[in-house]
Amino acid sequence: MTCFGRSTETAELWRHFKAGRNLLMLAPRRIGKTVQINHLRDTAAEQGFRAIVLEVAGFREEKDFFRQCCATIQEELSTGAKVMTAFNDRLSRLFRGHDGGDWRQALLQTDWRDFANHLLAHLDEHKNEPPWLILVDELPIFVLALRERGGVQAVSDFLYWLRNMRQKYRQVRWLYTGSIGLDSVARRDSVEGALNDLDVFPFAPFGPDTARAFLADIAKRRGRTLHEDAAEVILRRLGWLSPYYLEKVAEDACTLVGTGGVLDLPRAQTALDRMLDLEKRTYWSTWREHLDRNFSDPERSRFYTVLETVAKSDAGAGSDALLPALNRGSEPVGEAALRHLLDTLLADGYLAVDSERRYRFRMNLLREWWLRYVVL
Image (spheres, rainbow, N blue to C red):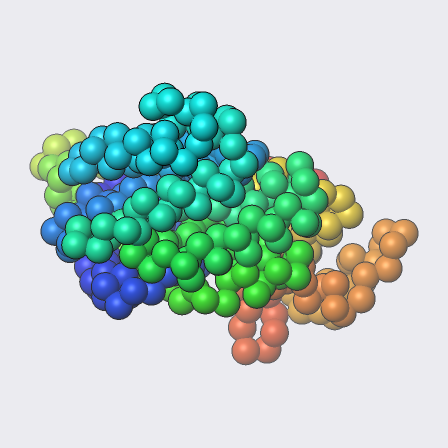
């Protein structure tokens, strides 16, 4: 997916980085965060930066994090190989027994904090060269893996250590993002102070005009013309204008009309209906997988209860319906626990809330999928 319609966000992000800020990008899944950070990496040289993207979702230990960091720096096209060669020389001087070996050997033989401190010092010290920008994708997933392995203390140690490094090495900029909010993870473990130096950068879905232009661009690239009625029904039925789902619907609709044809209302409706077919379950499975993988019972079961209750009501649901549904189990759930559940589901993109404090699915089509495949 190209970084369509994000010129304003891109310019604002570069403004923050040039002002020396580190950022926490908050946005639900399927909204284009990964596309955006890859675009930042690809355009960094034009902005006077050297940038790398770290995808850390599959890692479970701190050494894995910094092994990936070093490997990615080494692959950076402008000066990465030169930087890592110099870093190897630095390690040879610092650690006995390293003897000019590869940095991987030093990482295995030393405490990860010492190794990472020297790495960041090395990136920071060349003040006359472009600063480094480290774009970390799925950091919250990595932090949850740390928690599973080492408990809350491991999470606290790592996040506060990162904060100290951001304070110490100002020539290195950071952006953290992921499919769940790092702020929510930190709040759960009472380590929000580790994030208080980060500027929050909300990353929103497309607005209606950008979504229409995006759909029209997809149709044009496929040799079709998008009828305005087709665009409107796609926007209305999705509700929440995720670039990912807009693209999936438009691409499928284009297969229903020949080259040079018009993508009209009936074909758009057919494509929307087909989004819920069983063979397209991978488009939606990440929403369920997120709850199953990152939460344990009884919290996980409570999330499912909230989502089922909300999905079954066309008008949405308030606490007057949600609390009785949650309290059908053996362990009582109060207002504070409900508020935590709702805050998490809001932050992670499942729900939206109106002025009357009634909760609805943020995306209409996700509600339809939830009712068809999840609700019993």
